Image (cartoon, rainbow over all chains, first blue to last red; front, side, top):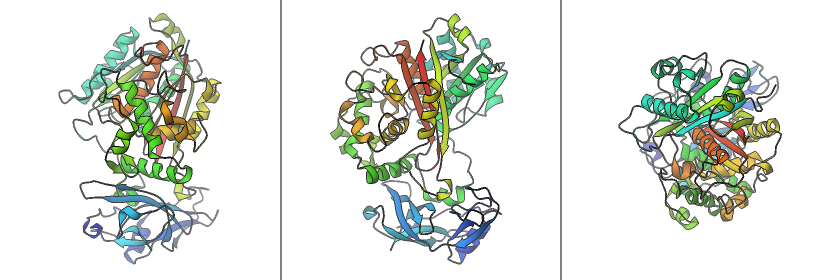
Length: 129
Length: 382
């Protein structure tokens, strides 16, 4: 079902291109600030916490837990479940849950990243482990 | 420097329509402007400040020209549904600073006739758009987590809709006038877990407008005096994903700012207009504004506590967005209008709060579960 869904290709820009290049290699990247040590998502060149420009790319484990979710019962492309995953590295990311029974999702459930193709770079989604 | 008492709401108008396929959006803006100007007993040429938001076609200079205004101050702040509550504060600031003396604020549009214009993409677009955040599922995510953290139930949320429907039965313009029960809400179809159809507001065409002016001018006009004594605005988003908490809104910051400026506490409020895009919106705002402790909103709204004449905190006595009107998917304007009606003693007799001298109008804009703004206005009858 979700495999058949067509997702829009990321537009990308100079600030985020490295994220999408890594996604093509199956890597899920976050940004970390070397000044304050905090990781953040989605990636910015200037740290949203301390405003330092000393931010670096870091490959994340791609694993985390469901913070919350909601199953949209109807849409032009069928039912889909949106939610936030809190990564092992700390930041929470907005996503959709895929490749599972969407009615059995639970807050606290462990999930991992999976990439789905677009006409451009692949997009990160999460699925229960 | 404070805006306390520096600005009065001298004119209000809510368009009676809920479906306007035969009118243009600009025309609806003109009709609500005319209504509010006439309510204040003024003329168009008295207006020297204009406040408009993302719903006004073309923005500031096309709308000023279309309406035939000659203004010396404009503000096109767009913070979604709470734009008009934020602009009420901005109008007070402009009046206090002498930048204008009679401000017009308008809202109008036709989302029931056709889909509203999409917002221009923000810097997050590539990392979020594909996941299909809508109002339904963004607020659903908040409700889901609130239930998880605090044991809030669907029955408790349903009481908010029940209270709104009790009020809407007296509003001849309300889109949904039928009184509903908790069971009706629970039996309505699931839209986006855990929110059901009757947890959601209506979609309506229409609009509203306000006239905001100085104390001196307000006293020279014929309407009962209603003034702004406290105002707050704030924004909240995932903030880089650190310490995500979707169980509170930016109202935890806008509310205390407004109460502090007004010099009152939530206990003093006689009537509350609370943005009700969804039932969960009301519950979270009541907690964030301090009407009850965080996590106790479910208990607070249950058993008719929000019904005028029944409970302790009468809310949205026009039927609110849940039952009456939600023009342009932006609920802030009608929140101010019903609060002014209550303070003037012009609400429907069945829902009029007796001796209503202090009211709150609070709203959010954007998506509570993603990123949003909030604004709080405290109004006083003089």
